[in-house]
Length: 456
Image (cartoon, rainbow, N blue to C red; front, side):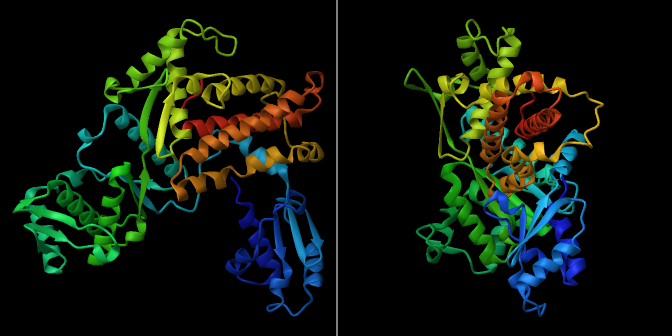
């Protein structure tokens, strides 16, 4: 999508004859919508322009001429900018994949992988959710322009000789200490337990292998981000690894971050079910589907068993992603497939209902003459649509996939409010409402794609 802030920075830099970096640091986002989309506090320019900030704001108002901004307003020492909302809507509708970032991070690479070396240590169903998280993260980072790296050959380098060599490297750096029959890297001054390399002459395979792999990554590659997916028990171990790499001089540890998996618990009739009962996502789907197949009538349509299975599968994925920022993810059947919850069933029903309204807008109909006044009446919705790129960026910065599912729910809520207030008789005359709904539906679909859900 268009980066309106950059467009504004270029326009202001041209008129003020100042560097773009200086201008970008001055521009603010107002707390209230009536103050515009961006604001320039002109009193911050007085040390560079020998004029009253009020005069600077007034003069700039007359000079700014950008097609991307509907208007500018000078209010005292502030200059407020209002984006032309029709550009936001047109850009959403003109592309099938409006979330794809076209610039900014193309030259940067990222590795996203599970932290441990032994997948057998986690339950089968947790392995499923680990894979869901990993693939969703990869799609989001890819959408932001990052190149996803797959250093598969690193497993071949985790042989006994290489592991022994890396241990010798750490000994040469005087980082390995012999204590109580163990070779350890002491981290007590960092308030961490010792990192055990070997015990009574026998190498600690897991610790040594992870250390070997991480150091070879840093020697061989130059990744912008190294993201490890960890479970709750591995967090201290991960912090130990990062500190060891930092003190040993192996690479830039600022690039290291972790995505924490919550502990999955499955509840049925107020009783916790053993996770080893579910050897795959299909077995969990089968259990849930069996309960709803005979009596659930979704959105007024009685679906066949295959479609029900897909809806249950997508409901499970959405529920997991929506709760992925929690330490414990409690799976409750009633919450996952209930009509009374803000869950995937709610999203699917709302989406299908809203899509029906889009039929009032001819696919070939020109949208260049949209009524700006009518569009601005739905400023709350437009603000949410406009925020989509920043939502995606926040997801990558915070490593929090639940930001996406919560965004979908927020968007659906606002679209449903518009839907309820619509006069069906006036739909053909009020194409602006339909255009906004269509834009919202497109963003919902694209966001669900990112978390691995393909709408029916």
